[in-house]
Image (tube, rainbow, N blue to C red; front, side):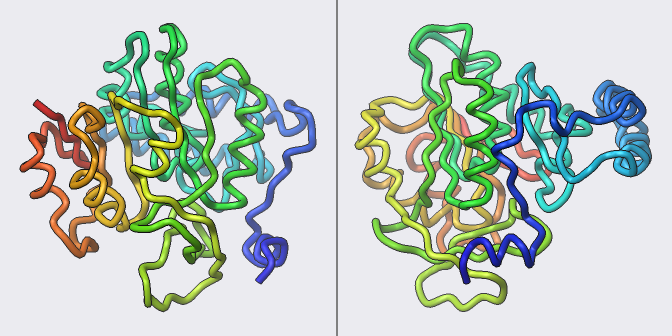
Length: 289
């Protein structure tokens, strides 16, 4: 199905033509967003955030021109859970993981964001990386709609060290199939060879991680985040087995989809010198010693 038809059916829209400010929220909604972003990250703060978020959503159209992590961005309140969470309360969005990655900032630091979605990790890390020389961030995201949204936000922030790469990652180079659920673009995922899935399916170009990094002249990695909906081990295991020692990241944030993996990624990482430093609600933080 052509991507335009899919957008119409699923209400996943893109406006990368209107000038920034077109979707600026009204005073009431803006005030509530300021409140939700200032809430503490405890149980009470989370409950208040849910309540106030519902109220604020009434006065907001599908798109919001806002500032996030200190940068102008256009976000969407529907169809992408990550965008909605970051819009109303970024302090709840993988804070420990982002802080761990940001702590790696230094001259020549490199961060690889796999399954970037709207590159919220990348923008958050860039807020620190931009203060150092020759830093690089690769934001890898294959979904055609998300890619356009991301490209628009990057056009608003041309001085950031973020390079978008609009391909998928897999066990081989070539064409792969990606399924997109109706209600959350962030849950789009690549299908394994021979897998049959319900939902809209699009063909995308895919690369191996090692091949892509070689093409981009990456010879060291400080931090990496990978969140690709259960496909993590299919990308990382070949990389860990084949990459030279100097290319192995110092720190990796992995979405914990252990029950979906065909091989034990964490066990292999342990043989490569990684230790599980932190397990959060959604992720495992591995550090190499």
